[in-house]
Image (cartoon, rainbow, N blue to C red; front, side):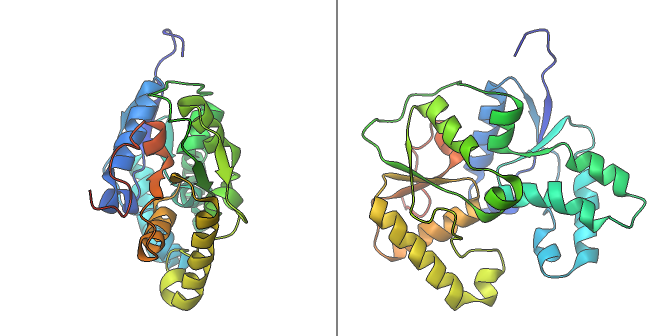
Amino acid sequence: MPASTPAPKIGLFVTCPVDLMRPSVAFACIKLLEDAGCEVVVPPQSCCGQVAWNNGLSGEARTLARQVVAAFAAVDYVVAPSGSCASMLKNHYPTLFADSDELARVEAFSARVYELTVFLHDVLGVQSNSPAPAENSKTVAYHDSCAGLRELGIRQQPRALARHYRGVHLGDLEDSETCCGFGGTFCVKFADISNHMVTAKARQVAALHPDLLLGGDLSCLLNLAGKLRRQGDRDTRVFHIAEFLAGWDDRPALGWEE
């Protein structure tokens, strides 16, 4: 980024799973964005409202959405390390306020929202602020989360960044576009179906036998890591793509007890 160009001010939407379960993902995001020349702030924030929205609680979802829109009013872009939450902010907030006089303000907010890898690759055009290259002997696989893939079109961006940042080629899982079975409250309401789906996904991981399994949604990765560990897989180390891009795959993986 040219020195004369003001640094874009990024509001990081941390997401509930990252805040509660894996704060290192947020710190990795900050590192990546700052290395790319951005100013990063983390406004006080709440849940994006997706759980309420998906369960028919539109009023509660609107209350949470108003808080988020107000909190991120003073930034140039809103970036989230989650296709699921980013899609809620970008695609579903306008639907929540479709018949409201607040719609124009919400649409202006949603237009500034990006998932992390889309922002780095498509908006900033990042090529490399590379940490140490990944070991060439490592096999790396990427899990495409449903919301990111289907609602935001995220597929090639994380793979391209992995090549630029770490010099790796990512292998594709069989049926890589198939859901892992998490689906938010889906895994609670339909536990048997969810378990069948994640069991099938774990078999696909085992068939490829990667050293590292990456993804862009922590909730999916928690689901997958938990299943892999319960099935006795102590070899596949699971990380969020932000952690991998930041060079932090030498740290404890999801589901490990180091």
